[in-house]
Image (cartoon, rainbow over all chains, first blue to last red; front, side, top):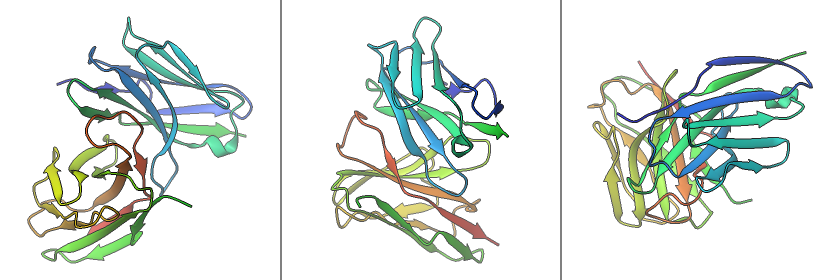
Length: 112
Length: 115
């Protein structure tokens, strides 16, 4: 079946460096994508979203890039801070199917 | 502050007992959802409700039941028929029922342990 996946289950980044978390999707009909951050013992928090008519969207310290040609989504976090430690997962939505699929998540570990 | 409140945070039950997880939202959202989260897996949809007094099964509804008597509340009952109930349960809501046009808002979850 169609699914959302992540390239790396764990990512370790030096504090102050930029982080890049990747997500691959296989449903070419997906037209809306969301990144969530989940801290230990808490529910997922919305970070940023992007629709398929865009290639890039920026927020505060975060940027999401969408490459529809290779069905790839990435989340870039600038100047990573200790508070960024969490699991990050992507979600893809196909409005045609009226379905949301969540990825398994990547754990971001910040090195001092 | 508006948000979704799940209670309790931790719940312990003996095998064979039914247990009800609470989810309340004051966001005035139409749609509410229950997901199950297991280690190494993406969120899986149990039940969802797009409007009061109506709900639909998700991908893993067996062994669960829900009700939606009020817009603000969407409790989930884990019955003794659920084969593997120990998990982290997440409730979510969204402003518009039907298509996913905006991100889901999540509660902070209830961790259920059944022994």
